[in-house]
Length: 287
Image 1: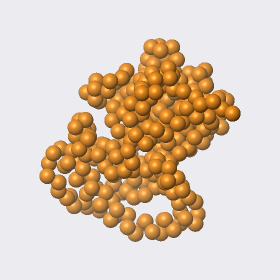
Image 2: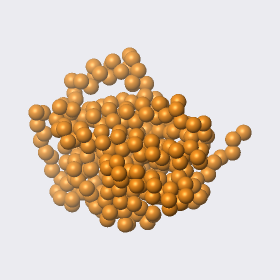
Image 3: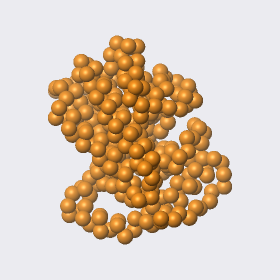
C-alpha cells in the first residue's frame, strides 16, 4: 500500500508563474508547504508574485542554465519542475509569419526540452518529478491552432520518450487542459497585459485552480500521470484515433476559415475588454 507523498519542504520550480495556470500552481504549492521558485519575463508581475521570483527569458539558453543553477545554489537541491510557460498564436497555418512559428517552437518546445534536460540530473538525485503543462490540442488539433497544437504534440512525444529513458524513481507527468479561463488569448494577440487587464480579458473555460489541483496530484501521487482538465474531456483523446480522426478531418476542414474568423473576433473582443474599451468586431481576411 503506497503512502501519499507530500510537497512540504520540496523545492519546486514553476515556469511562467505570474499569471493564469502558473500563478494558480504557485499558490496551491505554497499553501501545501512547498518551497516555490518561479520565473517570467515580466518583472512588474514578478515583483507582485509574493514568491521567490527570478526574471528569465526562457528562450535564451544562457538564462535557462542560470535559472537551474540559481535554484540549486540557493536551496541545495531541486525536487520538481513544472514546465508551464508557453505561448500561442491564433490564425490558420498559412496566416502565420515566420516569427510566430519560430517563437512558438522556441518557447513551447526548445525551452521546455532544454530546461528539462538541465534539471533532470538534479531530479534524479531526489527521485523527483517533471510536470508538463501540455494541451488537449496536442492530441486533437482544432482550427485555428495547427502550429500551437504541433508544439504541444512535440511535448507529449517528449513525455513518452522520457518515461522510457529517465532513471527509476523519476516521474514524468503531463497535464492536458482544454480551454482554461486565463489571459492566453490576450497574449496570443500580442498583448502583455497588466494584472488588471488580464483579469478583465480572461477567456472562457475551466478555472486555472482545476489545473493546479491536477499538478498537485501529480507531485503527491506515485508513478507517471497523464490527465485531462477537466477530467471529463479525457475521452476526447479518442478523436486522435481512426476512424474518429478521419471523421474529424472531414468535418473540420470545410469550416476551418469560419472557426478562425470567429476565434479572432472573440480574441479582439477580449483585448478590447482588457483595455477597458467598447467591444467591437474586427473582420478578418482569409489571405
